[in-house]
Image (cartoon, rainbow, N blue to C red; front, side):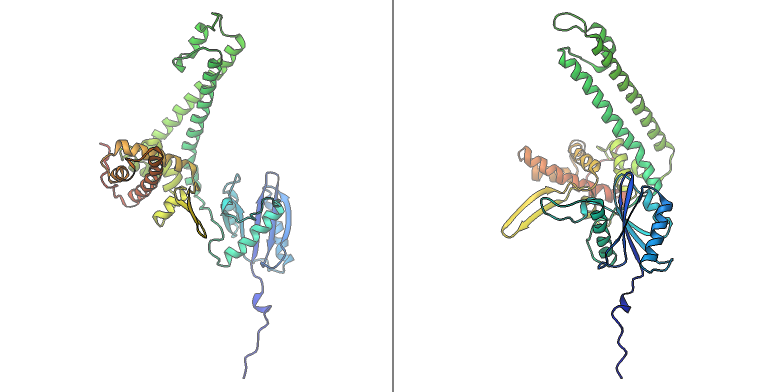
Length: 379
């Protein structure tokens, strides 16, 4: 007796609602569907209106004939809105993914249409593919815990304060250079404005002096702010028993790694991420090579420059410092044997390779406590 045949449609009854967000400053565009071969339901709602979002999801379930308790899977691109929406969606029982924007596939034509509606439709299609088990559809961003995200505020504020102070100091030097007036030390600017003379022996113009005085007040304010941030960071290092702070102390024990570098490495890279292998470490810093091969054409395109730009720039600077402060280490000797006798271009290429190896060595040092071979610790 032959078994009863099942209808194809019965085995494909949708049970999950897929939602893609295209986030804007004033409006959000939603694309919702249950199957990849189904036209998405598109809705536009005010930004950050969570009550409206709940209503739209409820209406979409009724539109597609899903029960009220049907599971919801969603995604949105990482950007200015950060991770607060992800945490809200997860608290509501929605399986959400924050996607790296640069990993989303796009049409390679020179000119292509791009709107929030088209982006949302593309996202929901890729979301169904990823949920169905397709590998390497896109790259999903690892969302930090709220405490780990809050710990990044100290060094980021310090970085921006130093950058902004440098802008004002450079502006002061540029304004004086335009008048042919040299300035030996920046700290002498208040008295220098009273004694400086132009090429013909006259005093500086009054409006220029007023502008320079205001610029100097801004530099003083930033200097005070930077000192306060450093004081707060030292207090955290002395009094806090947080595991991330312990990693900062551990990494700072290596000669050639200062407190600024150790803090940024840990808070941006090592503290809250879970690396499985050395390739993930190098890939997240954007220090992996990008080989290009098509037919008989083969060449290297340089490093990928993906991931955290601050860590990548710091790793290269640390590599130069490592050659100076750790000359007897195995990594420094490897660099000297392979690149030390080359020209300036070869040495710069080699320093990027050394930076990647150093990041991997720091990761192993923090995970297992194994000191990089031949490296010296501070007394």
